[in-house]
Image 1 (cartoon, rainbow, N blue to C red):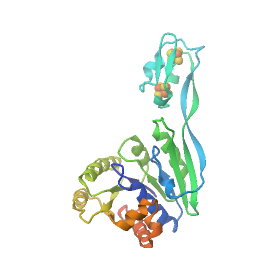
Image 2 (image 1 turned 90 degrees about the vertical axis):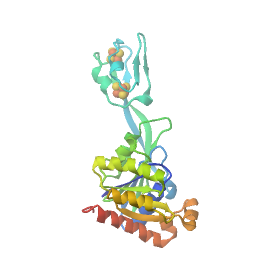
Image 3 (image 1 turned 135 degrees about the vertical axis):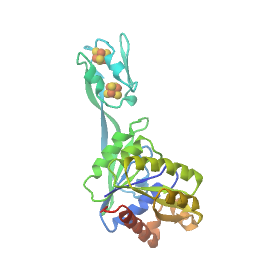
Image 4 (image 1 turned 30 degrees about the vertical axis):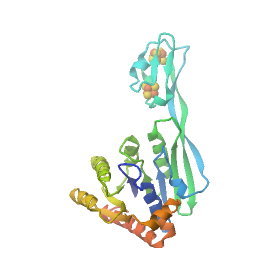
Length: 283
Ligand code: SF4
Ligand code: SF4
């Protein structure tokens, strides 16, 4: 089973929910957790342990200047503006290249070859016997998050249960993360801003046909705004985490409530059971 945990915006406590859920489940069954927030991964901070690092490579063009006739066909083809051909030279901006391979195909004289270029790493950790933590890290200055997310997800394949921590928002990295998942948990706050972003995120999962449910975080007891929204959209509320001094104190120290307070371990296991119930047929 593959479950993504997402939020329409940052700062909702999404990664904390993922970490607590992973910690709680790992005592009962083996699972992999993939940090797909590759621009700012932080799940590993909850599970300090050594990592095995794998490079993430993409293919980029290399022009053989001895063969190039400066016809301009490759530059005209590149819709990303990565390649510009002048009369006597060319300009290639590797950060803009999306590795589509089109320029190599259109070159009439075979002057373009592909070479590998590293854009990030994937880190694999085993902090406990039941937990495999896979972290995608996009190199600073790079913009191509999807290849890093794809490789991080590939490393988790084969695990019977996989959790994906999606990046905030609804841009390409989130779509890549949601590809192939069975269920999506949205973590939201009971505020108008939270509802606004939840509306956008729900639009994405509906479009992709992914069933979803909601965790209300930092609830002050007045969750009407979220519950009304969920009722209107037939979205199950799977769990509520209160705005509570004890919880805040634990989390502010970078600890997990599931680790410090055993009753929360049970609640996160119940969250997983709710996903299975709501997701009908998920195992
Ligand atoms: S591989 Fe694609 S994106 Fe990259 S330079 Fe060539 S045409 Fe542009
Ligand atoms: S298409 Fe080939 S020959 Fe034409 S400018 Fe590009 S590299 Fe040079």
